Image 1 (spheres, rainbow, N blue to C red):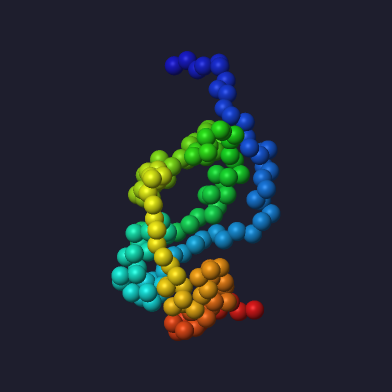
Image 2: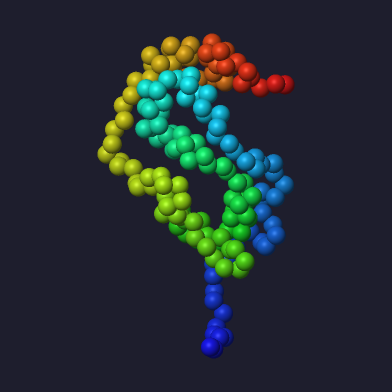
Length: 163
């Protein structure tokens, strides 16, 4: 078997080897979604199914898959990115070889829908009654203090951040 003497040219790295802007920042190494069980029990089945069918339902589906976030893998992919022009793809160098992570791979790995949104879809939901029931001004949206009051009213005040 003969070896090729031609050197393959891959895109240049986004960051110099061994350097990246993330290396000195703190990051959460694992994210466990098991805490969502408490939310499911608090809001009831109808509301839970409604949330699950919404655009943020992806978080619930990740919880149902017992998904655990690994920041080390993501950090490696981001720190070794290659420069590409496609916004829907991330290319990274692993052991000197390029790999692609795109919406297609994301969909295959997670089993989630990665189809484009229909720009003609109109979602018109009036959240005014909901926010008023929660004690939140519907004109400016929720503030953290208002959410904390909601949690206390629901009996889940132990979520308050300890100073």
